[in-house]
Image 1 (spheres, helix red, strand yellow):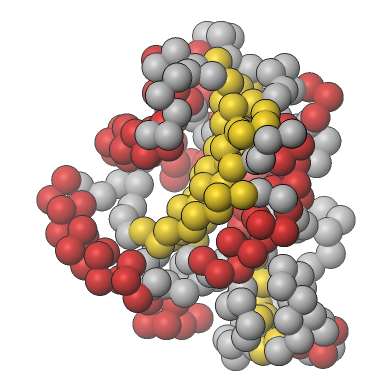
Image 2 (tube, rainbow, N blue to C red):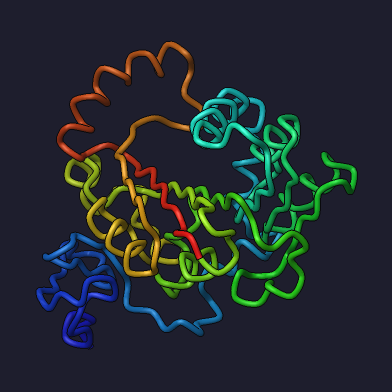
Length: 277
C-alpha cells in the first residue's frame, strides 16, 4: 500500500497536502505546508532504533566513540552556545548524552548534571568518565520519568535526538513537564530544507529509514515547540560538523552565512523557554 494514501494529515501542522518526494524511498513523506519529512511507522514498532540498544549492531555508537578526540572543539563550542543564556549554573539533563563529552563541560562549569543514553557502549564510557558522579540512565524517554533524580531542570538538551523518536510530540512534551518555570530546552536536529537534501536527493545521509523518522524544517520545528506550550521559540539553521577541522570551520562560516539566509544549512538549532507558572 502506498504510504501517501494512508496518511491524510501532517503529524505536526495538520496540513493535508502530503507528497512522496523520493521515488526510491516511498516510506518518506513530505508535508507541503510546513516542509516536515516523515515516515509512516507505528509508535510501538519495536524495530525502531533497536540498533542503538544492541552493542554489537550499534555502528553509530562505534563511530561516535572513534571520533571522540575530534569532538573536543565541537563540545566546547556547543557548550558556549547553550550556556550563553545561563550565566548561573543549575540543573541540566542531556537526552542522548553519548559518551558524556558535553555534560563534562557543564560539570566543570558547576552544573548539576544528569544524562540519558540508550546505547550500552556509549553509556558505559560516560559512566566511567564521570566515576559515578553523574547519573546516566539507560531507559527510553517514554519510561524514564520515575528514575530521574533532579526534576525539575533549568535546562534540557537534546542533540540529534528528536529525529529518532516515533512520536514527534513525545520529547517536547516530556521536556516541558520536566523543566522549571522559565527553564530552557535546546535541540539540535537535521534540517529538511538543507541544500544537501536537494543536491544528493535519495543519497542524502539523513534519509535513514531505520533511524530518522521525522526530519524538520525550521517552520515545522517552531510550530511543534509552540504547540507544546513553549514560548520564545527560536530556530536557527547552522552549518558544520562534529569533526570539522579549524580550517574547515572558518571556510564554512562564509558559506554558512549565505545558506543561513536561505534557510538551507545542514542542521537546525532550536531554543525554547517554558513560561512562568
